[in-house]
Every structure is written in C-alpha cells, then in structure tokens.
Image 1 (cartoon, one colour):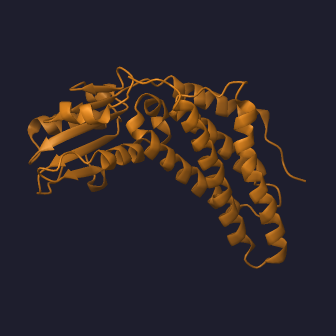
Image 2 (cartoon, rainbow, N blue to C red; image 1 turned 180 degrees about the horizontal axis):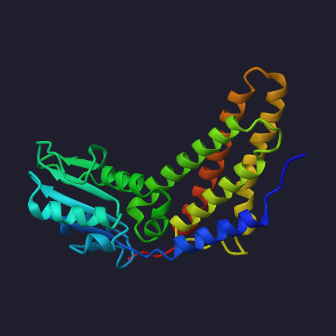
Image 3 (cartoon, rainbow, N blue to C red; image 1 turned 180 degrees about the vertical axis):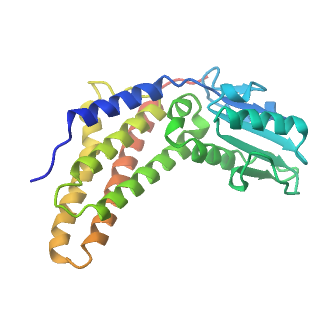
Length: 262
C-alpha cells in the first residue's frame, strides 16, 4: 500500500513558498552599458524589477558589465556581492577573456563586439544562477520567466529520477515524488505571477495528476523487467515529472499571458 503525504510535509511546503513570495529583491545591474542591458531585459517588466547601479547586496542577483580587464571598482562591487551571499553574473564585453575576481568561469557571459548583448543567453544564465530563489523575480521580469521555468522543470525532474532509482520499497517513493511535483507546480505558478487559489486548484491538481499515470506504467514495467527495474523507475519518474512541469508551465503561461504589462 502506498504511503501518504504527511500534513507536516505540506505545511513545510506552504511555509517555504510563503517565504519565497516575500522576496521582492530586484535584479541589480551596474557597469558600462548597464542602462542598455536594463532596457533590453526589462521589456514588459514590472516597475522596480531591475535596478541600475544599485547596491549589489540589495539584489536577488548582481550583474556586472565589464569593459575590458576588471578594475578595482569591479572587484569592490563583486566582493560586496560575495560577502552578502548574492549570486553574481559577469557580462564581459570585448574578445579577451580575463580572470574576474569572485566570479567563476561558468558565471561569465561573453559579448562579441558590435553584436549587442546576447539577451537570451544572459537571461538563461540568470535563471541558472537563481534556480528556485528566482521565482519572485521571474513574476516581475518576463525575460527570465521561460528560462527559469525550464531550469525548474529540469531540476525537479532530475531530483525525482534520483529518488525513483534510490527507493526500492514499492510505494515508498510516492510521497516524495508527489511532493516534489506539487512544489514544482507551485514554483511555476509563482514564477508566472499566478496565485494558485481555490478557484484554480482543480486545474492545478489535474496537471499533477498527469504524472500519476506514468507511475502506474512504471509499476507494470517493473513486474515485466525486474532486472532493470531501477532504470525504469528513474526514467519514468523523470519523464512523469517533466510532463507535469510542462503541462503546468503551459497552463500558467496562458493565464499570465492575459495580464497586461507595461
């Protein structure tokens, strides 16, 4: 018999999401051409979603645009972000690659001279740095909404795949997989600025229910392929969670698309 979700787990999820909703910090951009990058990233954004030349420690993420080799001012601001535990992204203009203090190589986006900012690449890099902590910002900044949704869907799908492989007791993985799927759906709702209230819960639950069919298939396959059962469980957990996430994303995208933007 499958285990059930505990009330404490659901309460913890509700508390987690409430705390996330209270994070209203903006994206902070500074450096040469910061105003231009703001203009390109802020299309359709809510007022205050992006702050130019603000303090790094006040942001959900700090983007520093560099023109050439890092300057003492660059280092000072990046150090302030590091001390405040604010994730950073460096946007390097020009063709030369420099060692940037307090920034890993994977946290740098290069801009080819004369081709403008690679806005889509920058948006994906921001989403990859923020992950779950970026849902509040994504609700106000449409430029990162799509990439953040993809990051969340992939993250939770991989988590459930690992859970599906690791847990061998029949039904024991059900609460964990389902809780992760609920968390994913609610995170996607928050990223789209959609409140999953009682009027929308039937539709939200319908998207979660899509993943249950995959687990039923998995149980049948486990009986037919016992030797590779762990592989089947992991694959189905991943595929089912991705199906839930993509269905939820399409739903919330359509709902958010009805909202006016500036």
